[in-house]
Length: 324
Image 1 (cartoon, helix red, strand yellow):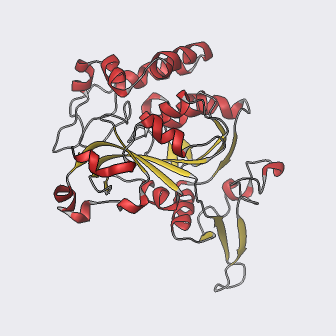
Image 2: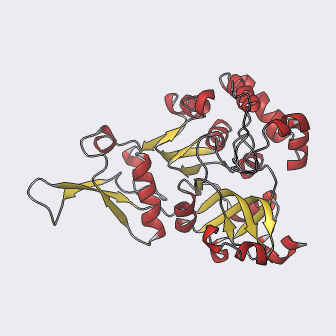
Image 3: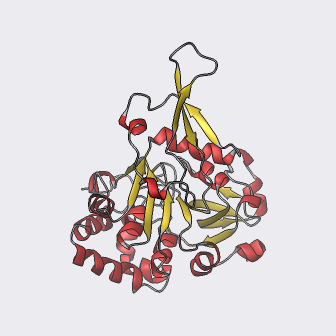
C-alpha cells in the first residue's frame, strides 16, 4: 500500500497526539473558520484530556471552539474566532473569554500571519505599520505575571521610531512565533510525505514552517509519480512533516475544497448545543468521547448527509447545498 512507504511518519491520530502533543504546549491550528479545520486531531486531543494548551492562530473556528469548550486551552493569541453564519463569534470561545476561563491576546489577521512568517524565517520579530493608532497596539491582553513564561512574549509588541524614516515616523515590532506543534488538514500527502493543499492555504504554510513539529491529516495518499506531477501545486516538503494521519473527511464539519463542503446541518446542531453548558457536555460525549474512530464518526453523520455535502470535483464546493 502507498501509505506504507511513509514508514514511521504514518500513524494513527491517537499515536500522533501521544507522541507530539504535551500539556502546556504552544499549538498552531491550521484552517480558517469553517474551512479545513484539523477536526480529527482536535477531537483526539480532547479525548486524551490535554490541558493548558497555548493556542496561536490568525483566525479560526470549529476546532478552536471545541478545544476551548472542552477545557484544553489556557492561553490564546488570535485575530478572530467565528463559525460564519452559524456563530459570528465562536460560542464557547466567547463564553470562555467573558468568564475569564482563558487568557487571550488579540492581534490583527495580518499581524498574526507576519508573526508566523517571522518564525518560519528564523527571525526574532517582524516589522509593520499595521495597527498603529488602534487599540490592538494600545492594549495588552495577557497579565503581567504571565509575561516571559513559556512561549508568552515578554511584551505584546513594541512601537519604535523608524530608523530609516523621518521624525515621528513609527513602526510596530511583532514577536515571531515558533509553536511546539502545528496541526493541519490537507487534501493530499505523497507517499514520500510531500503535502499538497488545494484552494486557499490561509496561514497554514507559515504555521507549519515555523513549528517544531507538524502533524498532517489528509484525505488521500498519492503515489510518488502523482505527487511529482505538477510540482508547483505542492505546498510543504517531506522533511517538515513529522506525522501523517490518513483520515478521509477529517475536517468535517468544516469544508475541504474539492472533497466536501461544510456541513450546515452539523454546524447548526453544534451552534444550538454549544450555548448551554449541559447541552455542550452532551455534544462532547456524543460526538467526541463516545466515538472510537473516524469510521464510527462518519457512520454517525450518515451516508445521505455526506452525499449532500460532497463537493463538485470541478467547482470545489457543493452547488445547491441548503446552507440555511
